[in-house]
Length: 404
Figure 1: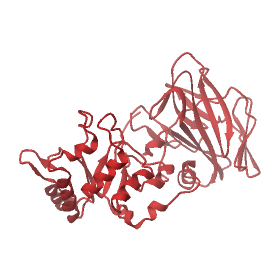
Figure 2: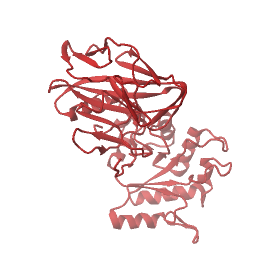
Figure 3: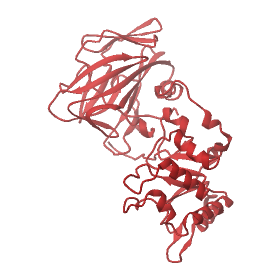
Figure 4: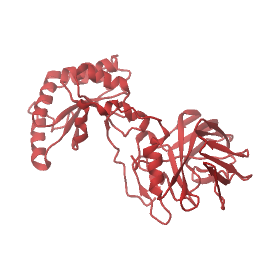
């Protein structure tokens, strides 16, 4: 997971912060201009001989920092266990677009990760001094992160992480990469400092792999140790198909064509490990039928789908169905019971969780009641705190060439 990165937003202090410590390992002293004067790491003091802000941020297209703050924001800071909490409050009469919050600043850091450009899905970039920034993929729920590595003396270094607390937003609106703060609105960011040494890659390893984004202290590995779920580790090729796709069903001949599609794939590229059927988009919501009724209304009903699942497995391809958490306002049915009934009726081997980057124990429990070995597969990459409840997921391939 060392290749997972993020973007953020920043603001600054109106008060003078004299000193904060984290887990008794790192503390820092700030000067009257809010620049960092020194770090203390396990009793050793490192003086900062240049002007380094504690964090930086953007409002619209304008850059600010704790040294050069915006007069539209008031910022307070408090220690919360092993990390700090920064609260940004809009004291202006305008709506503020806050984004690209990162520790320290873009100048003078060994490496940093934040947003670049204005693409709706693909802004997160890794920056190195003197290099062209590289577009990187991050977990779906980690697009609101910032990272920077600061070299103290050539060997001792600090990796720092900022994370937006989505639940903390007051009088504001959250976007993937921005927080819109209305007048009087506020948002909190969690701020972490971790020591490392060696190359800049070691800082990424410390934060994103060893510390698991500071999401969880201990990774519960129970699902990953289950033998019946480990087959997904060796599944590499997957097709997600709409139920109206001509390669799934020929409406003119009124017959299923999925098996021909799988046979052709076997010849062309060695075949599919998984095929997933999607009958709910874009039809869900056009009438009162819920997502489970749309499965039932396919030609031949659930029995025909069960037959397709069996025929697919005979070709070495597992058969997935889909789940849509946004199915509200249709014919009422408990989603977990509906999922259990659907897996039981179709003998599905897995479920694609639309729009989700996590699962939750309830999903796997519903599947386990129907049969063993059923995989929950999220549409997006989960962050570490969500990973213990889901063993697989898709990485959004939102990487684009850009001059931004």
